[in-house]
Image 1 (tube, helix red, strand yellow):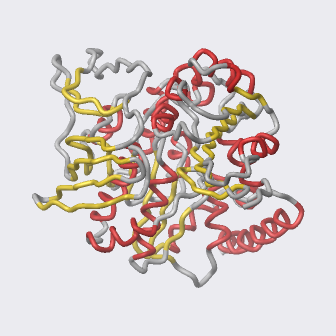
Image 2: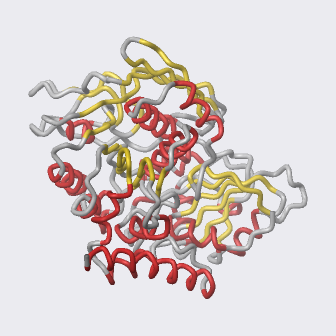
Length: 447
């Protein structure tokens, strides 16, 4: 009885904290109420599963969590399901608690919960919430000062999986680190059999491919490699290889969309996604696989894909001072390199890099990212944020003429620079790190 009282009191506390922060602060309030609730009642999240009638879906991985979980949530909502989802990507315990605390009410229930989780916090989340599904997108090197090497990140996820023996896994078969989670587990695999390009940008990367070892320490070999370690891999020594896919697909990647053909039980289904890049095709394939597992059909999924709009810097389109602006978060070598392939070299480009805790203090990833893709940029390239000078130096070594590079540490002033022209047909590309994206989102920008 006391625990229930604390839980209901937490809901009131959360709403009060959220109202206060919206009144007195510029903050989006994605975590503050959750932080207050967990401080008052640390077991708050253990009650939240009682308010979900159907399934709890969790999504983790280095890149694509926000887009994949956003797609899943949007597909379910378009199928007339009530969904609770940490939409804005606040994916640590405080962010998850924030979402539940502001959405739940004593007699209000949801059909599904779709929870994006930081890799390192997934095992803590499973201490309180018993998930039905876990979608794992990929594992790339990311924020070495916070996560360490990939084996550490994989260990976090494996520990979480081990806590929940009834968990059903939806795994990227093309990533050897991800597919390994399916060993002796209930797992469904998705992946691409082939990828073709029909796009205006250079889809090949200048970044060197990393060598990945099998668990037996033999280097993996590839018959097909799409990007980073994603592809068709095998180990000559122990026989480890890419698993057969329950959802095998082909992708035709164009400049502003992709066509994905998905084979399930020997029947092929075609989908169009209005998102750029192969990395987003992977995100969509994960969401499609999970949606089929939940019993949705092709028409329901495609209808939702047609109306999906990117959120919060993940291929997000905005109008800034009359100019069309495309905003894409960059935060690690593989993700940045894939985004850089798609940049419109005729646009004014702003790269805003911070080194705050949420970004990772270590910015050495800039040197492993394929900024050489920008060497033929035809207009302004502005660097901003706390590490604007470091970014400018990286661009110099990428081959961009110094007279094209402008350093402006103030993100607000940098926005003014790239949107100053009266010709509103000129487009803008903005590539921010995480806290630079938060800053950008708070700015009062003219449309």
